Image 1 (cartoon, rainbow, N blue to C red):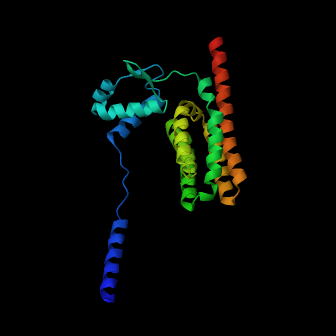
Image 2: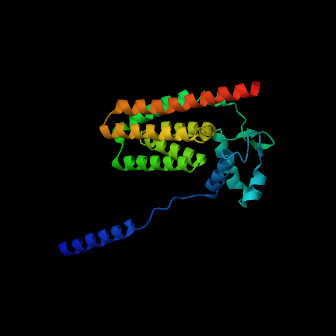
Image 3: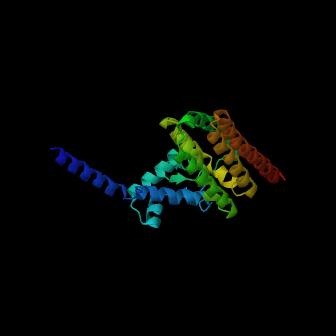
Length: 244
């Protein structure tokens, strides 16, 4: 009996070992792919504010059936990335920057809360991921890849919000980041802004490594405060230029 149990345990361990070698593949649906295509075109201003986006046209252009296209467009609309127009489909919002800037204090407060909740749950793997993402952010600035910078920056902050232990908070922050992404897309076109953000992220990482929760939360506040100040200056400049 003991010998049989030993053989069974050995066989189970071998099976587990074999299974562990299989790579993890992230499931990606057609709706996910359409979502990314439309979102990226909006970010690159290939679909500027005011552009109408119709389900049938997207389906024809991408070769994807209308059901996943509808799912993708509804998802973008739920994040305020698109707006629904009765009987006409969807439209890229033409919101003034001032309206989007009103969201920044909300995002800042929630990011600080998420950072505080995540503080004692952050793992060594999380720290490695944060450093890796910050390195990618630095490279995006060097390569002039503003869209990549936005994606990597959001991924950096998502590590903390996902680790907060509060799924509703993490989901809300995902939605808010999507709403201010057009502001972020401008912000990361300026190399000085990218360099400043990278440096601020380093301070956040070092605060975690030192075990200093107060410094972590303050680092998050400063990171968003500087971005907001830069965006407010750009709004003032644009308004001044348009009035001349």
